[in-house]
Each structure stands twice: as C-alpha cells, then as structure tokens.
Amino acid sequence: MNPDIKARVADKLQLLYHSSEALVHIQQLLEDYPIAPRGRPGSHETPILIAYGDHIQHDGDAPLQILQRFAHEALQGIIGGIHLLPFYPYTSDDGFSVVDYLAVNPSLGTWSEIELFRGEFRLMFDLVLNHASVSCDWFQRFLRNEAPYNDYFVTAAADTNLSAVVRPRTHPLLTPFETAAGTRYVWTTFSADQVDLNFANPAVLLEFIRILLEYVQRGADYIRLDAVAFLWKTIGTSCIHLPQTHTVIQLMRDVLDEAAPWVKLISETNVPHQENLLYFGDGENEAQLVYQFALPPLLLHTFYTSSARTLSVWAAGLNTPSPNTSFFNFTASHDGIGVRPVADILSPADIGVLLETVQQRGGQISYRSNSDGTKSAYELNITYFDALAEPGEPLAQSVDRFITSQAIMLALSGLPGIYLPSLFGAANWDAGAAQTGCARSINREKFELSRLAEELNTPESRYAQVFDRYKTLLRVRGACSAFDWEVPQRILDLDSAVFAVERGGLIALHNVSQQIINIRLPDDILRHDLLSDRICQGSAVLHPYQTQWLESKE
Image 1: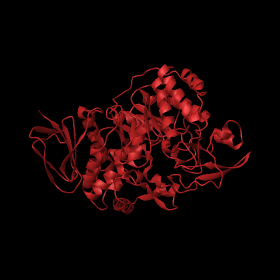
Image 2: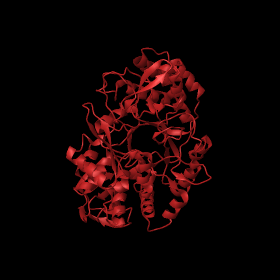
Image 3: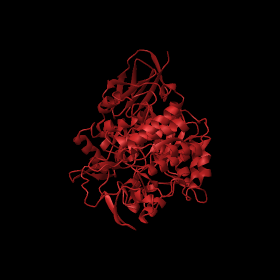
C-alpha cells in the first residue's frame, strides 16, 4: 500500500472510530482483490445510458443479454457507458432494497451477462450503502441477535426525539422489529423494507470496502454512491451531510486511488444545489462527479416560462473545485424530478407552478415530512417528455421542445446521463403506478422488444421521431471536440428566450419559446450549424424550440 495513502486511511479511521485497527483489514482486502489496469472503451465525455437490467424484455432471453444487444446494435459509438441500475437480488424499490450485494438477480442473468458489456461500454454500478433489505442475511442474523450482526444496523429507543432529522419520506423513521433480544426500533430512512446500516461500526465499513473492490474487479468504472448524504446518524443532529459521511467517502476514494485510480465516484444527493456541491470535497479527495439535481426542474421551469433567464444565471455560476471534477448532467432518471434541489434557486410561487403543471399533465407529487410536522413536495413523478408536452398540441412541437431540452443538457460541461425511456420520449406509465401503488413507477415502464422494434420502425411514431432526433444529437456531440470534458463553458446573454452557451469556439443556441427568434451573434464570422448543416454569419434565426450548434468556420 502506498505510504501516503496508508497514512491518509489511518487518519480517517482515527477520526471515525478513534482507532486505526481496521487498517490491517483494509490492506488485506486490497491484497484479496488485485485489480489489473484496464483500458476503457470510449472517452470520459461520452454519454452514459441509465437502464434497468430488464428495461427491454423478450421471452426466452436473459434481459441483460437483450439490453446488451440493443446497446450494441442501436447505440454503439454514440453511448460510451451504461449505468446498470441495481441488478442484485432485492425485495422492493425496483432494486434499491438489496438482499445480496455480490450476486446478480437470476431473473436478469448472471455475472457472465454483465461481462458482455465490458468490451464495448464503461459500466456504472450502484453502491447502495445507506440501507439493505430486511431479507438480507445480515439483517436476518441481526433479528437472531447474532454477533457481530446485532450491531450492523442503526437503532434507537422508541421515544427518542428525532425531530431534527431531515426526512426524504413521510413514513415513521423508526420501525419496530421483534428480535431474539426483544423489540428493537430500527432506523428506516426510505421504507420499512430498507433498514439503515450502522457505519459507526467499522465492521460495516469493511463490508462495503470489500463490496466496492469486487464491483471494480467485476468491471465498474463508475461507482454511484446511492443516497450517501444520509449515511451517518448522530442523534440530535439533522443526520444529513455529517462530517463522518464525508470522511467515509474520502476513505473510499483513498482505497480506489490505491487499487484502481481510473475509477470515479459519483455522489447521488437529492438536496439543495449548494449542499450538493459539498460532495466534491476539495476537488481531489471526494467524488469526481456529482449528480446535477437542479438541472431537471430548472429546465421544466425554463420551458414553462419560455424564459432562459433563471437557467442562464444559474449555469453561469457553475464551478467545480478542480479540473478533475465535473457534474453528471441528466434530465430524467429512475426516480422522480427532485424539488428540493431548486429550493435555493426558484421562488415558492415558481415551484408551485411546477407542481400544478406536472399534475395537469398526468404526473404525481411525492412528499416528505418536515421537522415541524408538516409535509412538503419532494419530487415530481412523471416522464420527462410528458412533463414538457402541452396537452393537445401537435406531436411535432412536443418532440421539438423535448429534443431542445435534451440538447441543453448535452451542451453543458460535464458527463451526460440519459435514462433509457427518454431515448424514445416514453409516456407516463399510469398502469404501472396503479399496479405498484408507487408514484415512481410512472417513469419505470419496461419495454417488450418486438413492440419497441415496431414503434422504432414506424417513422411517424413518437418513439421513432424522438429516437432518430436523439441519435443525431449524440452523433454530432460525439464528433465535436468542443464538448470535451476539459473545454470550459461560458453562458451568453443573447435573448431571454434563448439559452446560449459557448464552448471552445462553438456556440450552442436553444430557443425555449414558441416564438421565432433572431439572434445577433457576438462575432461576424462564418458559422456552420452542425445540426442543420446550414451556414450563418453575424446572426441566426431560431424557429420555435429549435437548437443550433454553431461551429466556427474560421
């Protein structure tokens, strides 16, 4: 073990546990999981597809094989990586209530199917480290009061005052379980089926370092730290963003710097924007990538108001603490569209418009409990296409607006993440939400391969129109060096209805309104629109919801 890294790990163990005894176990784990350097397909700017292992299904074939075949045939060269949402055995929350962290759900396939992706795509795995399923072996041993598992989960007395704890849900924070040692009240941040792990016990930390190293050995180039903001609990505090949580992330970064320095940590923290930035640390010691949670609701606000002002001001202030850090930009995911991330950006009235409009367009609102006993909106549950489409308007206009929303996300500095249903402009899956009773299911529809193929082969269908346009954006972006990670961005103030960003001589223009906009460009040189193949000089005319990516010809 590198002496500098060894010293850093020892210091962090002292901070967490007032002992560095676990250091010898970490060194042994590093020996047990040797990881050979490997080349990675694609570049680190190439977009990541976000998908469930069974997002595309066909009778008789392992879903992971179907997904891999679809990605190979339809997305090769334009998608560089795949975030495989939790593919482990689970009991609820579509995979995020993990039963066995080191196994592949047999209904999806095996580790051999995961291996199929590796030669062509970089892989992102979820490290679901805040909680586990009540059916996992650790918790079953906890119920039997077996050491050391009887201290693997966070417990508190039933009458503990937990009013200061920041909540992402509305159910009771403590759930009673009958154990061999009597009734114990277990911390359940997200659901009664998801029991929170006790990282104050160094044995739990060691379990997850082992899991982390196996994921990397299995091919993960990105590790998504799921719900990491809630990791450490100290009664009497908010139990979010605690210093110990950051220390655990830093320790995992140290381990990866030793074992596989090319692997990137990505923090998933659905919190107000300024709080989200904390997970970069000093730019070298925590996550290399932070989910850009403010972007999805800000884009909705932009199109609902036909004004790019708020989005432009926010984007102009985006900074990361070092060249080695960046944002993971996305508009849709397996979860809803977070409301909290824009609490420090949009007014309550603006947020109210988001809630009202989403409900008018068939969406639902999920809530969380506040410390004063009230409830507030936590996220919007709706597909991104339906959130943007005005009821009754022509399909062509809905597609134009949606594609421009995606073009903005792709033009921003950072690593783009694209949720698989967004590739086709998927509609709200109302039947799924009704079936599961979970609002998030509205954006978690799975696709039967033959039906999907039929839709994509019908040029006038919504799926085909969106997919063809989306692939064009991705091809153009992939061929343009201005979108490389290290190329800085500058937000231009050209018109209130146009989001304009300059990157390396390229000017990306996005009309967020139904009006035709004539833009005076900041220079008089010849420019080539990479999307329409047209030439302009000094000015550009943007039709409603049109995108132009203008590359200098001089």
